[in-house]
Image 1 (cartoon, rainbow, N blue to C red):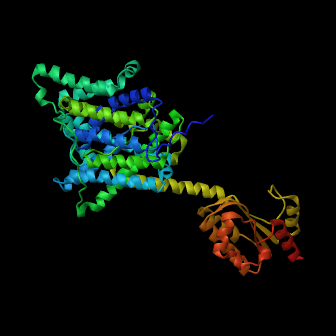
Image 2 (cartoon, rainbow, N blue to C red):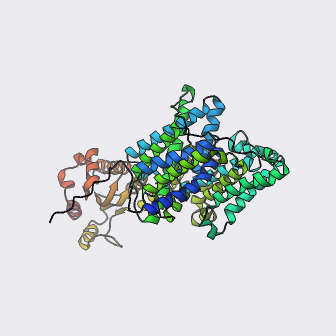
Image 3 (spheres, rainbow, N blue to C red):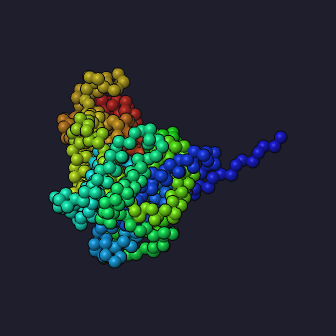
Length: 561
């Protein structure tokens, strides 16, 4: 009896593409494409690059991320957070160079993709999302608020004022005064559909698509009877056919700014995609490959920038809908991209009639959904310091700068965490000269300490000794009284940081200088190797280091006698 040959292994380069669930994957792809269409239009217009840039961004980022990513059921496309950064990039570069600003913005998208690939190749995926939740929550809530503020102009029937967030807030009274009633009505109807569509109808058609169709039909029928369709701001003509290749374009004066923008866009895309991948894992009970996912995201953004599309990342809404519709392998993301491309090529004429106010309503609702309302309501009850960090990050994100917001938020959160850990670990630094009390020592070692009559000191360290513990080591050592022998016990040290190791070295040297009998015992593994590299063991004879704690105490007591 011969055994069947083993099936060929899937190339590591490609994502998990399976033919075992073709029906579910195709249905998931169709459903995700239906949701992607209105969102891509809204984000493309909101970014300032145009509807076509949003549509092709959805196709290209989604296709390449599905082919080469590391999360089988992930749907990638332009997202709210990425659109906010993209809007700022386009506004800044076109303001400095109206003729070539858009070309430089698409180059920033390509650079962001290159950085994402580098992150993946360096296997940094598991570190990307290891930020305090207070910072992530504040950052995402700030981005949501920015998206809401930037849509106020189109929501009221006018263009986005210059100056971004601050420009919009300054011009708000004028925007309200000059609000165009028909477009405000369309925007309000859009929000009403998005918020109040019954769950039963949502299972049949996504509310975004319903709002898009309803708003367009109303603008072409009701207003047409009143002769006012020419006053409605619409998407306008979208170029048919495949997009043209755009080669990278640099201006020397803008190079540093472009690199910084690319770093922000790339890092945000990594966070957005990997957080969504975690959501996908929790639903499908699978495990994604974060580094491979970053490579797929990077390839997708490079392709999008090369063909005039805006940046994208893993989209939570599209991913969840895809999974709920039956999508399980990358075939769902591939089919979604192909279906969306066919729709774009065949129906761009219809899309040209969509009112911009409707897209503003869709984008504004996305902004509302991005804000972490659940955590905002209870953050102060969980941790006051955490809540303050979150509010600070929100304020910096909205009013100052995205990089500053994340950098300052992470710095403060880490400093507070280190302070708390240091305070806890400082309690593990003990100087003991008597066997009385609740000590984690055998009875014979307690007896030896008692025999020392206060002249033998056990200097004990426990757990992870990070740099914040160095002060406690110095403080405890400075408090040592008139003792004749000191036993530095490192038996229970799981990690000895560089700063803590130097503090131990200083304590040992000072004890030697004062003529005390000094023993360093119990160090193993990395702790021992670090002390050896510091040269600490060269300052003591072998019989003071290569012995047990009990023998060190015994020798100390004998030396006293």
